[in-house]
Length: 225
Image (cartoon, rainbow, N blue to C red; front, side):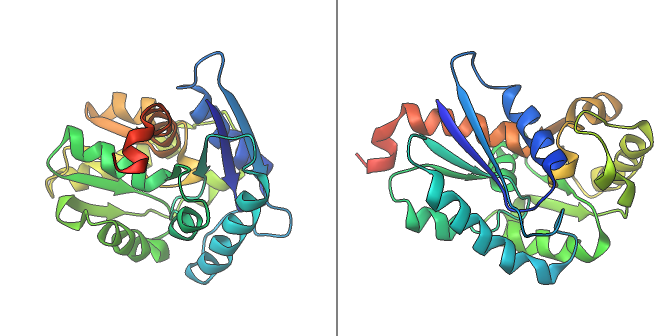
């Protein structure tokens, strides 16, 4: 399997964090190519930045798909996924949050979404609604944890884990039986958070890589046969 992972933001540390999550589920013979935007914010933290990120996703991926079997969009609002699917008919294009939400539906009746930045929370609610899963959503919690954006790719500090766990417990009271981590900078936190909560926590990039393999290995699904 040859995967193309696109980060439409300019942080190479976040790209490596995304890649670490993907590599956890790749086989030894699999190949992962990563792309990082140049003239872009280090991360999307404001609603007005979303449209430009979607345009970068389409531009970056369209130039680099040759020799790859699938594309993973490494931004948690799945910016540009639908446009890229139209531009690349027949090639699997996976959004990290969409992939995790779909998997969450297989393990629990209702799931919660954890992301960062209170101003971003409504966008994630709208995104889950747009992919047709709003009735399965227990809620979205988006604490302000700016320190999460300035860490080494491997780092998952306890202070952030415990802050996320506190928000997750609030979602449990709203009916959440599992969680989606919606945030590129939250890749890698799933194992620690799952240990704290005792409930399944899904990493979007890992979920996307697993779904990509299924779609690549089942071409009949893509052709409609």
